[in-house]
Length: 101
Length: 169
Image (cartoon, rainbow over all chains, first blue to last red; front, side, top):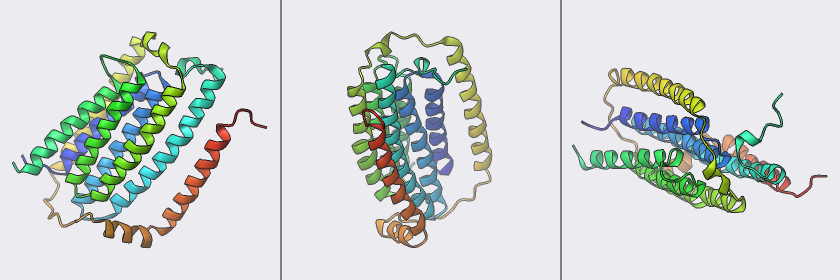
């Protein structure tokens, strides 16, 4: 069976759902963050596949932007996690209930 | 089946398998193992990018993700002492409901892709993902987003420095 656009999209879907599952089920802030990275990567794969099968470069430019934004996001997010850890001595979402009513 | 197709199946399998090990490793719940499998996932995904003729993006993916992002992750994991993670129990009700929800979403997206794939016309693949073409696109059509992106990086840098100060005044 020849590999087409849908094959890449299915792989991207599987990776996205894995990331989503990790965000919902895992309770460690760092693992949740890695799952978010997985979801961003799944979107990147879908965009590159669309770019290839539509013969347009724009998808790759958007992926370039996504990678940059993801790098900035990781830096800020990890700084937030470190600041939280300094206050609460925990990187576990169930210990961070300050905003709960 | 051509060689590229075989490569696709191998890389796709490895990417998904390493992705599973990132979020649901049955042997260890240590964040360091997850980070290592995330590196592998990203490297195999760069392989998929090469199959899709996105050579520059594959290089950037490895440089930025495997080189910078994961190192940052490992640095923070080593900074925080995360020994107690291993002892915590996962709540079964929440995990079950989450799995059902994600399964439903996967079913929806998968069905929509498969139903759309039948109507997909076979296209001639002429795109060569050369760095020259990407750079030309980046500095003509997308020059404003590119400049805004540099501003975003500056803001992120200032924000991180501010956040990591000991006491904010």
